[in-house]
Length: 85
Image (cartoon, rainbow, N blue to C red; front, side, top):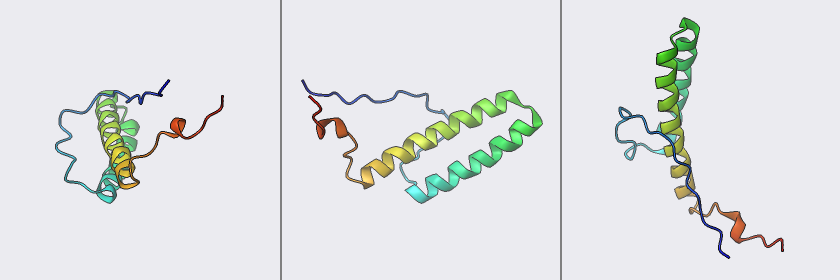
C-alpha cells in the first residue's frame, strides 16, 4: 500500500498578489514584517485587522515552505523511506 501525500488546504488571502516572483529571503522578510504589523494590530485591539494579517501570514508561510521544499529537492515524504512493519 502506497502512502499518499496529503496537501494541507488553507485559505489564501485574495490580496496577497503573485508570490511566485519572490525568493525565499524576500518571503521570509515579508513574513517578519507581517508579524510586526500583527503585534501593532493586536496592541490596538483591532480584531478584524488581526484576522486579515494572520491570513496573509499563512499565505506567505505556505509559499515559503513550498519554496524551501523545492530548493531541497522536494523529497519531504519520509514514510516511503522507513518500513516499520
